[in-house]
Image (tube, rainbow, N blue to C red; front, side, top):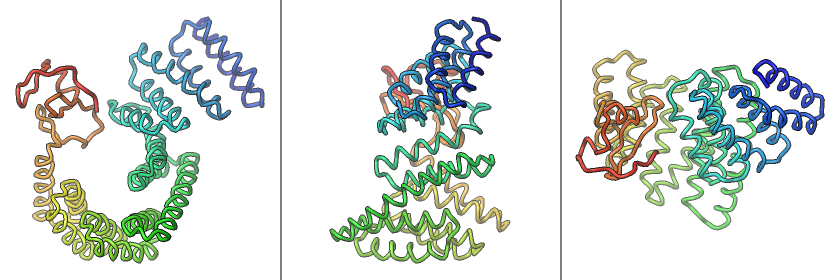
Length: 359
């Protein structure tokens, strides 16, 4: 079966599926899969099968064809096809509640080189990752992923993605609310503080700052009571973002300064990174170049302290979506840099490496 005939049969299957004849559509697509020699056509029909089985709730079949689609994408040697197939694999595992696998495949999607499909599918990757974090009750990470997905939806006018994100946020809110109820019943103060922080972040992300501020205040009171300084840093970061949203930049800087002091006390490099990055944005908007340069320098000092830079090209890890490679000595590099360098030993410590692991 040639390329044109494969395309016609795929379209015919779509018409059957859309006219409420899913079994006939599946049978037709399976025949195309058996007879077609066109790799691109096979990839597309596998995508149809994955989507159909997902909508029918037949997740094991969905996973089976997602795996076959990955193999086809590898044969095609095209990053766009790889991104789409890894997303399908992530979503299949999400439906089967294999959340750690979902997160791993989503990270693989994000680590692929820039593709045409990235703008279209990036929001779906973030949504799937958020759902997986929610399944693992990692509320803060789930919310961060949902916020990214929502930004993709707004930037691309994707109403369907926005609807799906809002459904996930509804589930997120319900789970946090239930967790808060249980925490109150059992007097679990740390969990109460975490739930209040999540509620505050939700209201901030929705632009409801009037509700967010008292939630942050309540979370901060408990964080101080239980001595959780890292939690206090997270609260102050959220408060600073609220002040930025209100254009009260001096108040935002006051919150950042307090958070920086706490982050320094506990040695929290990630918190310092986030705070310096937010400070950069504020001073850039105020046009204060000297202060801006100070925070740019401090940001990169934190990156260096944390080892978050590539020892070959010198760029910060994470500034762009790039695949990373960790050697047995625990030093991390851009995969492309190691490949271009043509070495299997660590450029930093020159220890012979064994089989590297991907992160």
